[in-house]
Image 1 (cartoon, rainbow over the protein chains, first blue to last red):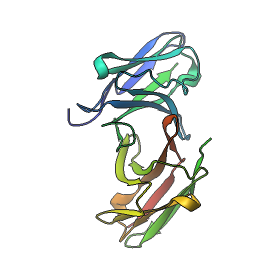
Image 2 (tube, rainbow over the protein chains, first blue to last red; image 1 turned 45 degrees about the vertical axis):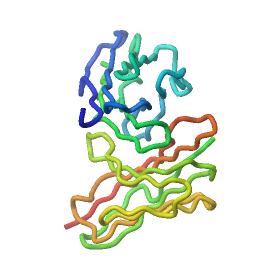
Image 3 (cartoon, rainbow over the protein chains, first blue to last red; image 1 turned 60 degrees about the vertical axis):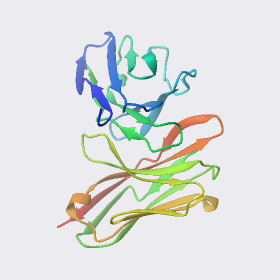
Length: 113
Length: 113
């Protein structure tokens, strides 16, 4: 596609429910990042995928968070048993490979009520 | 651990002025540095990427410089316009086993007509 696509753009969920956030990177980009941006805060790194290598999960805040990247393309970030503090904008980015220009999607705004 | 600081947190200038945004990082062993802008409620738009071997990059009215040894980068915006109003973020790729982009908290720029 022309850019990084994220869906849904907005998600409201009840506390305790599971949610899945989707990221379609730019075609041919092997590197993919997930970040979280809470209100008034900076960007918090969550996870990084590079091709078929093991992902760097060092930023995941708890075991309720997980992510997959199928076929080296689409990625899904799953949050289980959502809590109110999970409310944030979740941003995905891709680049041709690590160390090259990163392009971000428009984000998914998650609200846990 | 790499830390990125952007000062000031907010800046207001009259239209037409030239301005400089600052970014500093604690570990000079970076691979590259990237500047982004973020409009309210939107994702990040890539502006400029500077590799560690480069001193500056230019795109239109934007010029970014990098002084790796002192841990600093500046983004120069010439002849500012109201459309330049946004939050500007810098991010560094450090390598050496760390794959994440480390972001500053941004400078919120307002250009007054």
